Image 1 (cartoon, one colour):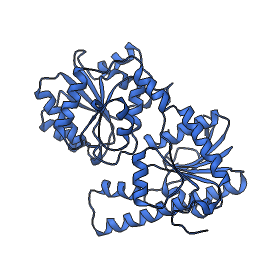
Image 2 (image 1 turned 60 degrees about the vertical axis):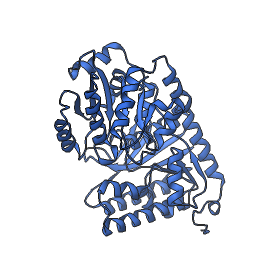
Image 3 (image 1 turned 45 degrees about the horizontal axis):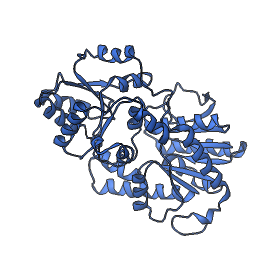
Length: 399
């Protein structure tokens, strides 16, 4: 099957879970015998317009952040040329902006769309304000998202939580399939003692101290200020630990200042962005991964990556991670916005650690294996090829 993927972000051009999901799905579909092209932003002028990476044919359109609509005209032209010159069986879209640029074209082809999260709600959360102008922008974003949903024959979400959000904002959307993201089990696996020791040595961490890890964009919804307050409570209880906080973002200086004011200079280390090839070593070296998100976590790729490396996870009850961790036990979950509950959850899992006996990795193998997820996606593509456009209009209108 010849598949054209449309994605605003794509790994390794940009770092993050959304782009990596597209990249890994493409790789595993290729391993099953499919041909994959990806159209994405050219976020770096040094990147070629056309390139083949891991047998994925990548086409990059010129991107200027200050002129996004002009950039998407380039995208529309590029996608139109591909559809006219190449034989494409299925289009798979991953973000609303790039898909909206060719919405009319999507209606003429079998199209599958992956809904990661409510686009407008993410915008309002990031803006940290909800004045009239921002609400107007959010309304326009919902309309664009709705237009894209109307163009797709099948909708994929990564969790039941994401499905509920989708039905809340677009209640007539049919043909929804819950298909989680996966983890590359060859890349994310328990590392050897030398690699684990390297992480402690790099950050000068005492071998007797418990090592906690968090990897997040440093933005408000990730709940990192509540994590720091929880760490202060944990320190006051006499627990010996060091918390590594990976990632970067606009809140970094504010969070570092909060850490200092709480007296956490020797307990919390902001390590910046961790290199992709080192992530498995960081997961494996840690005694516990902590996910302190306060809202809108529709999946949680870092959760399954940590579990694949045999490192347990404590997460707030923030949506998607509840569905991943719930079957493993209630001790893996704690309340949002509650530093005391988080501190108690961390202390409990450190005192009675989950045995690293293969159960966490086997759980990921059974439920989040990219090979099986690619197979489920392939079936959705096949179904999209056979259904008519009039069967799936979210607003009930015929084309």
